[in-house]
Length: 89
Length: 89
Length: 89
Length: 89
Image 1 (cartoon, rainbow over the protein chains, first blue to last red):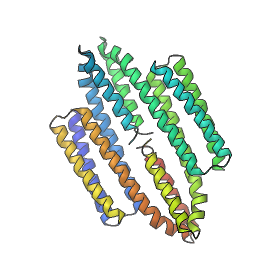
Image 2: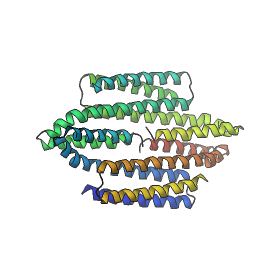
Image 3: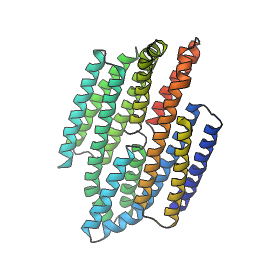
Image 4: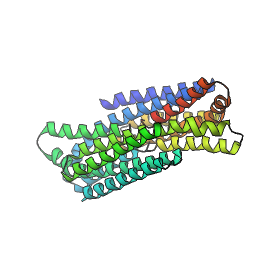
């Protein structure tokens, strides 16, 4: 299930952040540190997309095929909101 | 209708880019130029979100409430794809 | 000179935005519109990097090799600021 | 020193990622998970900027005030590269 893979990737990203801390404690070159942080951010983008994909194919379908227009509006607004927020990180 | 407002905003962004060209032709300070470009990108983020919101509340509802599972899958995949792409610009 | 190439690219982006307006006026599919906007944003990223590169190799060298510590501090802070802002668009 | 503060923030981000894993294991709502991931990415942006600021005010000044034009060119190119990469995550 996508979420279990997402959890594994989060675990990897967590370990990656520990590694970056060690780099910094050992006086690694700053640009190398920034590149590693950017790699973690790229990995987190991937996780967000996986979680969104999972959400779209479960909760969003349920809400949109359901009979509650407010619920439909809510889930659609959430998608636009995280798309907007995603453009800002 | 959201799209007409989006078109107006695109027109504004277009004019803003012309203004930045003039800044550069007149030898404006590079950092000021970059800040103006970043302002255009922020404005374009807003337009994308408006267009997505409009899409979600029209085509996506139609596709998901429809009886064609392939169409449903297609529109949902598109949303995940532009979310992923949005994280990269 | 990098800036003249940057101006040409801004002109191209400007034309691209006009094209997207036409797409919308002709009722193009929303996702295609968003993808085109993201393409413009990617192109603008490239222009910002060119302008920054030009700035680094001119004004920043002059300021840092100069004898005014305030000027040095100012240009360095500007670089950190646009890097931070770049992460948010 | 900026780097010690950056290390503390990386530690916090690491803990935040552990928290998100727990959220997912407990079946948290996908959109809430994505928002938390975006919060971690915003925090990582901040760390990158701090590390860059530190780098600018140490290695970059040394390189640019030094007499090796290749070293100067190298550090300036690195800055443009991470600015470009930062726009893509």
